[in-house]
Length: 510
Image 1 (cartoon, rainbow, N blue to C red):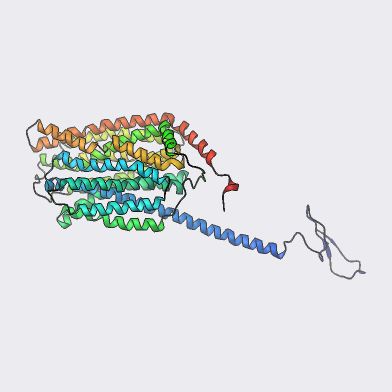
Image 2 (spheres, rainbow, N blue to C red; image 1 turned 90 degrees about the vertical axis):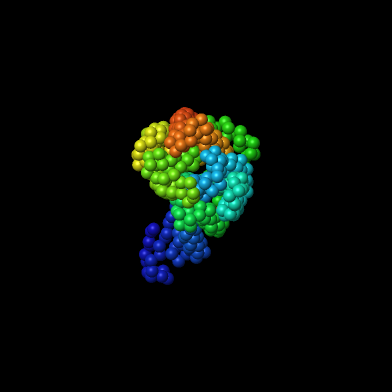
């Protein structure tokens, strides 16, 4: 700025300043000052500041809404697994009430999983194309009504209880298939890993609470059927909260994707995705082990104590609930520790190798197999030693749940994730826990038929049948190692495809 004082002959005694800026006209102070914005410009800037403040507030509200949505979805996942394992918590009472053997009791879980896996691909297709909130809430309301109704089935209609578990599986399939994809669309990268860890921690938490709820409510009410009336009430409440508070996130919202391929093209791409295929096979082995162990371990430990003569055999319900309570508590704690250890180990190993995710899963599986084997050795003489081995084995087994889901998010593009989750769920249940509970019960009955009926052989036959689990878990570790071989290549392919589908910034409406 340059100032020129008046020579005294001018009409003004004040300073006239020439204001200069690059690319602008030079004018006197008495003229228009181009370096200062006019009133309209000031108003626009004030409006911009207010809009920016509004956007900031809106951003904070959206962040809170996303976190709240993840919380509600995780609570819903807790209830799904609570309902699933409430039956396991009162399994001995169900056997006594309906007069069924081990194979009949195992059929309850097998029918549930079979209907679950058949319905999962259907909901995967629907979840990629229709309103996911409506599908989720409808599924919760459906299984809640069926579970509540099943508590009134007379003892002469065991087949009706089996049918009701099949219908519950259909309702729960909608939730397990679609809910993770909503979290995948609300978050990305490390935040997504954290939220998925919380979501999948709900699996062991809900499973453990299922044992605890079933045994505790039965003990208080004096009737095992009251245990089936708790989760439906909580399910209706959660379904309502989901409809009200969970935002409707667009598929690929975080990545701003455009376009959607056909279902057949999605399936073709998934089958060719080697990381996805091997991780799905590994997930099948996890399902096999958790389905079998979750269904039979409480009864196995009860029979061990009968052999050790620390408890009396139960012939008239209600029977002892101690083992279900202890196993449920262990499942809750190990689920929490497993998720933390898995997420922490993966984060640390990513500094060393980009293949950390599948490698951590493989180590967890192989370590878990060792401790599961030791359970059957320790149970013959010490229930406490058996519980310690269960604690270590479950912690390592549960460490890979959230990581497996994150592997899928890395190697599958957002617009086909619901289909990918559904197909993985179908395969893992088909090859895993759809048959393992019944298979273990069938093998146990087969061994008992070839021996004299006694508490000792009831214990040994079930233990021999359960020994199949650690061998399957080792196979799962091998599948995770195979996943590690192709993980980086498949992840890069997914990233390139996402970049091709990203909507240009100029095309995004504000």
